[in-house]
Image (tube, rainbow, N blue to C red; front, side, top):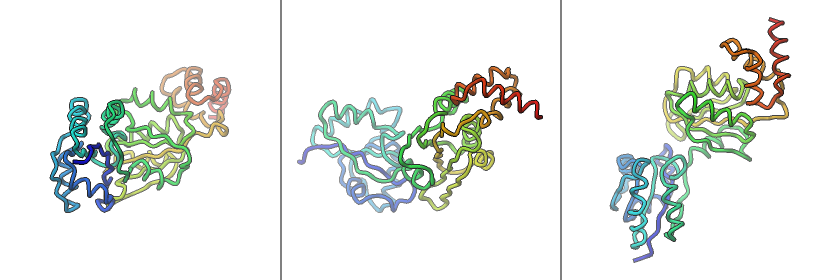
Length: 279
């Protein structure tokens, strides 16, 4: 029997034709297959005209810790262990990284079968800068958590990639407008590699209006990074006044936007006062 090993394998994010030959091979011969959703695994195997003959185990966020030793023991005993998520690469916003960490710590061989990635696919098709980027996972559901995350990312100069729910996309983009500005370039990528693939690119303000009633399908958002050299008080006057109109004192609103953007509080306050006088 050959030495056991753990294989992390990327699965198609939409089109089953993107399954790699190595994934097809492992699906047919792995002794143990740890899948985020066993039903989706069997569906993928069926679409690929394959039969998964190995032992299939559920391996998801709620049981990852309990499964780790079982999978490590299987590899140590000489078995081939395949780990797959619902779509894309395991461990990337999906279960698996704790297993990989333990495999390294315990000397159990682990390797990767590369393939489809929603993050890289969206980044490539977005038309935004790709030389430096950050993956931010799913935008938080709750307003407070989302606002905290976006506040921390206001000055991020790298292109940012987010996953999002079709039911929350409108709220997420509206929040991005408030924190990143309505002119910040972005792309909303929907149903990548599937029949109804759609990529909508433009300023965040336009995208927020377009998606305000929600969208269908799996969604990835790509947002251009901040350009601090071009930032000025005039760029954020509307946001200061919006907060003031919601009941916040003008000086407090200027201080809040200053902390978020790096633009001087005094400049923001004076610009907001001047804009008020004009109106």
